[in-house]
Amino acid sequence: MKNFVVKTIANAGALAVAVWLLDKITLTGDSTGKKAGTLIIVALIFGLVNFLVKPVVKLLSLPLLILTLGLFTLIVNALMLMLTSWVAGKLDLSFHVDGFWTAVLGGLIISIVSWALHVILPDED
Image (cartoon, rainbow, N blue to C red; front, side, top):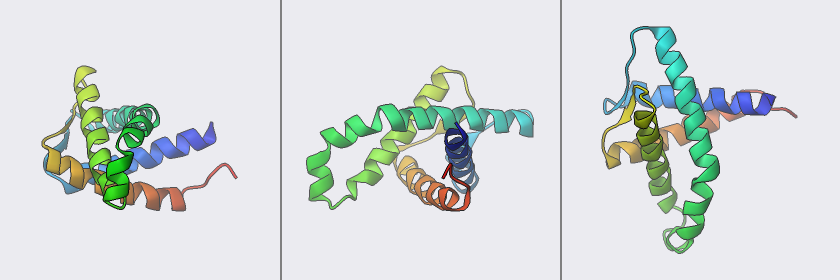
């Protein structure tokens, strides 16, 4: 359970950095508390999408992953971010990713920041 909370906080932090750096990834809200709550919910959605959908997409795109020596992972990450944005929109959350190339750059930022936060934050071991 502790590991789940740590990963969700890391995802929320990575999403916050992407929102802060990229103008076309937006998170709106009346107050900082509401934005933080929305960010946690979006991080949960992002984690769920990465847990359920991403392995299937990676398996189906395995030939492209091999052909591009793994660079196609950037596209897969972008698609997962766009799917998260779509689900957030359906749930009436104020998180939106505007455009595919923004999603590619956002996915790259989220991957780097999430990795760094997982190194810093404690694990269950």
